[in-house]
Image 1: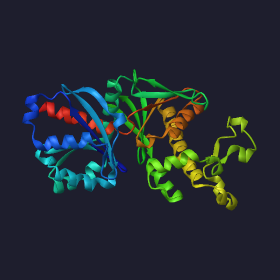
Image 2 (image 1 turned 90 degrees about the vertical axis):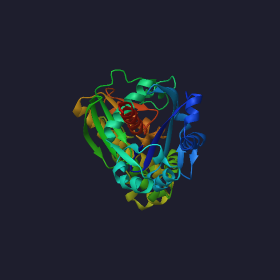
Image 3 (image 1 turned 135 degrees about the vertical axis):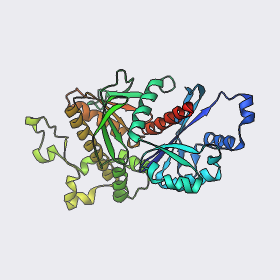
Image 4 (image 1 turned 30 degrees about the vertical axis):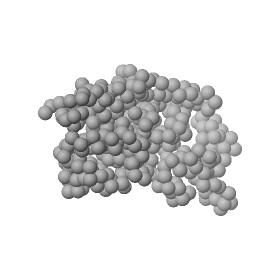
Length: 358
């Protein structure tokens, strides 16, 4: 499990090579848990199994099986712990591998409510190990990674698959509730360069305040229909065109939400415009910081991960454009299909390693 500030990400490996003898010996609790996890695509009101991300016929720890990816809001953690108690998780394992800040925050709740011990793992170690593992195994015969070809041309910008061959060094930008930026030199050699508190949680929080939406999906749907130029002040709004001396195009944002100081402008905008401007503001800020970090660390590959990018093609294309444009083609933005699940995958790998060592 990866217990973040906004979402809990859970991965579950389901062996499919179970022998008749193993199935006969399997306790009813485990059968019940497997049936529950694999036969549902929704759990309660907020839990979701991302069926489209399932990895099939994967070999782990000498067994063949399917890897399932499940997410639910962190605020629903008490319900998950209650489910663990009701289904007697503790009768099967006395310890769960968990990473993220919630591994510390909810440790005592797991122990007291469900009689479960958490093996707490460093979230950045898990992130890197999980990412490199999924890149190696691929996505059901296809590459895990992709980039956008011609990112500066909205008409010919297309998604292209790729592999992280010779991945190091890379700048890894993890966009969750907030943002952490890592310079990664090898699987076990990295440093946290910096971060920003303006991340996916900021986007959703501001959208809830400005538009009255309730979910990430609703906020993105609004943003997809809005026009941020009704909210943001552009270079051309100040110069009447491009600022040619420094290569600033007239369409460049000069002041995020800059039009909102005008009463008439405020009266004419829509909630969709506000959502789009919020998305552009957060994404541009992340892209700007990532570019400066890449320059400082002299790294040419920037890899973006995290649940902020889930179903968020607007931001992925904007980040790809920003990296390409401001670096004059020197920086390539790379993205991954499993966005925010790498920490949980890294925790699973540690669990399997721990099991092998016993």
